[in-house]
Image (cartoon, rainbow, N blue to C red; front, side, top):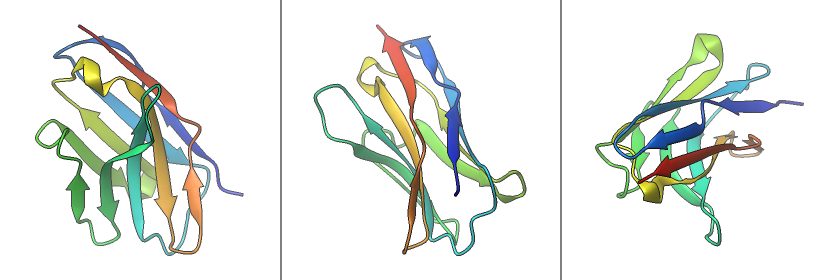
Amino acid sequence: QVQLVESGGGLVQAGGSLRLSCAASRTIFSVREMGWYRQAPGKERELVAVITSGSSTNYADSVKGRFTITRDNAKKTMYLQMNILKPEDTAVYYCRISTGLLDYWGQGTQVTVSS
């Protein structure tokens, strides 16, 4: 069973930065895409950023130009660099890895941005 463990969340002032990490417990084969999602209180979970097996990336309009998704296959880790954070970025952030047949989710990490 694969486990995804997120880290790097915390409390930061508006305008600050955080880097989230998502580490897989073992190598996952046939990955189609990896992504970060977030869920704010009272809202549905939404896509933040994805990176495909071909390294194409896609971002939610609300984070374009501020967030960057990357991965390090050797370390079995995915990252989300978040800059110029805003209070509306406050949410629990989840990582997801999809093979097309299986989806793996992390347990989530809280990001709180104070104004």
